Amino acid sequence: MPIQNHHGHPYMHHHGYRHEKHILICYKNFSKDCNVSHIGLGVTAAYTAKTLIDAGYFAQALPIFDASDLMKFIAAKEYTKHPVTHVLISAQFLPSVELQKMVRQYPEIKFAMNCHSNIGFLQAEPRAISLVREAIDLEVGVSNFHMSVNNRRTQSALQGMYGRPITYLPNLYNLHGAEPVNRPLWNGGTLRIGAYGSLRVYKNFSVAIAASVELAHKLKCQAEIWINHGRSDGAGNIVYQAASAWTKGLPNVTLKEFQWASWPEFKRQIGSMNILMQPSYTETFNNVTADGIAEGVPSV
Image 1 (cartoon, rainbow, N blue to C red):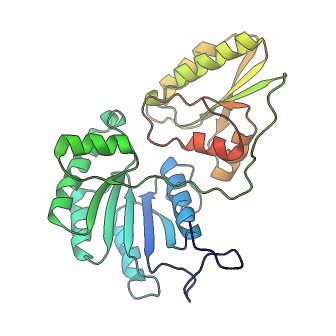
Image 2: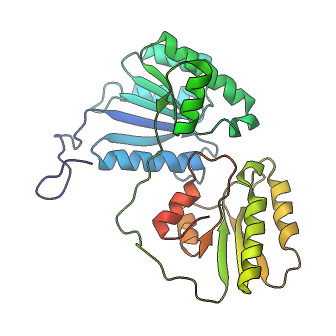
């Protein structure tokens, strides 16, 4: 926690921050829209940066499309009041040759590549596995780079597999201080159930929908089951078809679609639910569950 002065604010240096560090958290700019992102890694980067700022660090989330975007940003800040001191690259998307070149070009900057997937989910992206292994090897040869993960389980697995140190850098979720401590319990009427996220097979939405249908049947109530919709997400069409098949023709259950939106709008949508279903097979940090906690909505 930041040290507090008598006004209740963290002690800061003359430039406004207690710590002489500039922490850059980079994530892939899928939409090339730097102002808004509903991509999970963008949300994670933004709230990790917010949490670090509250602790007195100079931190920012930066969407980048490739290594050249990052190097241009570092170069632009090199002789300013806040030169970049730490770079965290969220997920594996930069080619190893470009990552190695950057790490060696800026030996005074500490770099890390943070894996946000566990061993099971990486099955969907063999190239990402190769990038993880190449990053582990890169750490052996340089002093200013670390291969990192956001969860203890993957950390233990990779260390056991390859005998190399893996740094643990957990996701940080910022609470603004106005979150509800509790909410009124559902007491009848339409039960609103949220099963949100990218429509991928590993997210296990089939079980989420099935559990929601069972819950509505046992409670003998009308229920709305809300899912995200509006982009393919690879196997998304299959997942959507499964959700439709479980709910089609039921007199008491309606499958509702929430189009992808900005994060503040999404959090408002979350806050209108009675319960969330998030039974993912492979999850290292579930943003939807974190949003539910912040909005006072329980998750299964």
